[in-house]
Image (cartoon, rainbow, N blue to C red; front, side, top):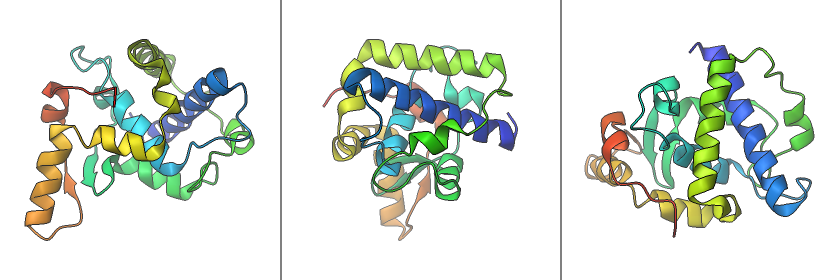
Length: 176
């Protein structure tokens, strides 16, 4: 996946989160899809279908996870969020996000993303309703984050790269 494709895929995933939010709340105008909440949802989505090679976000190219104080963060996605104006600290601007062109995104990528979303929804449809702080608590249960973040703290580092191998094999958590 190229850098531009990853950027388009990120926008596509955010659009899917917005649609999911809209399904649950019947509106998107007032939402709590902040940068923090979206990053946590993104990580949880990345933990879906990890037992299926080529059928998950990590194999797709979303594999630059770092341990930060508020949990795991895909560094490129975080950078995209900071660059673009469709999401801010408190909410997603759906009207701006809809203008993002994802039409050129490879259909195979869309299919993988959609399958992961469908699976996450089937595991816990209400995860989209959790607050950012509860999602932080949820992602803090992952051993990949615990190991990496503790290493960073012990070595006076602010962040530490997370192992995709550990993410793929560790126990998954989707409920508080």
